[in-house]
Length: 167
Image 1 (cartoon, rainbow, N blue to C red):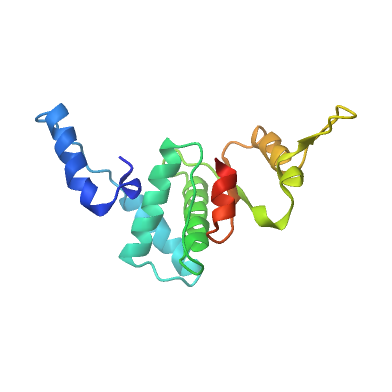
Image 2 (tube, rainbow, N blue to C red):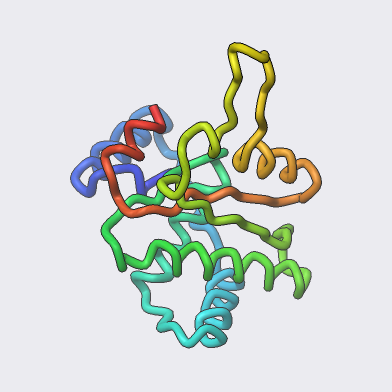
């Protein structure tokens, strides 16, 4: 379930609907102990505090990543979004290195979408010459086919302009 997408007061309502639809069915709790131990190891390597809140945010991002092709980390500056991402990627790579679970080594690229014009970011079609210019994002997607597990991250501060571009 994607609890990070719910408001806190909607969680009991959602759980009630699910229990009405599937009476008597109890979902097992995932066993994240190995995952948590590797998070703590990465935090220790990076001199970060592995607080319960920080580990919960990493777990929520991991669960979102499993079920979605893309998602946005939105929040105020210095809220820990980048550190959550870095520790998650380090954790998955460490688990791959130790051959724990089915995790893959993670490579990620961080792109600031405000650092360039949209045509340079997404590519553009020239109506006069009928040329298609492939730019940064398209090249990153082409590289994805060469790598088992690859994420492209747009990193910027919360901004209405960026949120409008997405839609």
